[in-house]
Structures are given as C-alpha cells and as structure tokens.
Amino acid sequence: MEHSNQYSRIAGIDEVGRGPLAGPVVACAIVIPDSTACRFIKDSKLLSPAGRLKAYAYLQEHALSYGIGLVGEQTIDTINIRNATKRAMEQALSMLHRTVELVLIDGNMEINTPLQQKTMIDGDRLHLSIASASIIAKIYRDAIMDRYARQYPEYGFEKHKGYGTKQHIDALRKYGPCPIHRRSFLHNILSGQLDLPDM
Picture 1 (cartoon, rainbow, N blue to C red):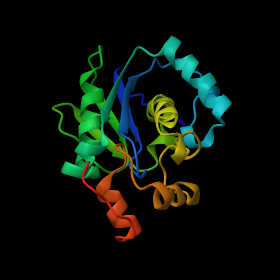
Picture 2: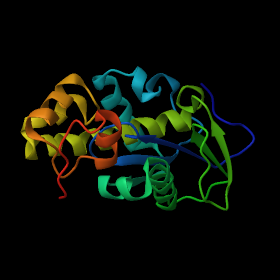
Picture 3: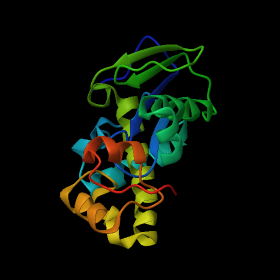
C-alpha cells in the first residue's frame, strides 16, 4: 500500500453500505499526512473490529482533515443506490477543511467535482488514503446501525448492519420492513415475497 508521491495534497474517498437492505450509505473523504503509519491502516474489511477501532483512533488523532457524507434509505429508493453513493461521496469531499490537488476514489465511479480525480478498483487495498476513508466510513455507519438496533431490536441490526443475512431476511418475513429498510432493495432481492405497505 502506498502514498502518491506526485501530489502533496490528496483526498481518499471510500463508501460503506451500498449493498445492505437497510440503513444509509456512508462515505468518507480524508486527507492524511505522508508520515501515516502503514501498520495501522488497511482496508477496513481486512481488519478485526478491534483493529478497526485502533486504526480509527489513530486517524482521529493524525488525519489532517476528513468529512462524512450520508444518504438515507428514502433517498436511496428515490434516486437509486449509484446516485446516492455519488451524492454521499460529494458531500464528504465538500466537508474537508483542506484544499486538495487530487481525489482518489475507490471503485470505478467518478463524482461531480472540479478537482482532478482518479478511480481505483480495489483502491482500499492499494492506497493509504482510501483505506483510511474505508475505516472511518465503516466505524461511522456501524455506529448508526447499532443505534437502529436499539430502536428496532427484532431485526438484529447490531449483528449484520443491515446486510441480507439469513437472520435478517427471516426477521423481514416475520415482522415485515421497518422505516429504515430500502424498499427498492427488498423488491429486488426478495422478488415480491414480502408485503411492502407504504410508510
């Protein structure tokens, strides 16, 4: 994993929550110093929960700036998940308190920005700033889903964070959807097996 040596001010962007059946999509844009310790930073999916918390604490202390973008389930249903993800990334970038020369984005989706940008497949495994963004976004979204778990305990959000696990789908079949479920995702994944009343 590397920094980019051609530019002195780089923002890495990553998102969490494109695939779940419930909750928001969350993006982070972050600027980290060149001296960031590699051993603390990995793609969030490769870190244990304890490792993510340690990396998160490190980034809270050492990041030069970061911003969070969040788009909720109702907007996801209205504009689709791709556009919602772009909006979350653009929000996160707009929250930075540092000017940047280059934006590195995990995946292959460009966003609306006048800044130079580069998309990177598996960027969270290739570049430190994107990996850092993945950690912040993951911790932030997990905390949101943990709060929803207390509000809607029957779905087990604290365990699966809204993803379509067997436990989650079984709960949906038993209780039906709650206000944070993405209606468009339920129709697509469960193929009309659920009664989806308007909320």
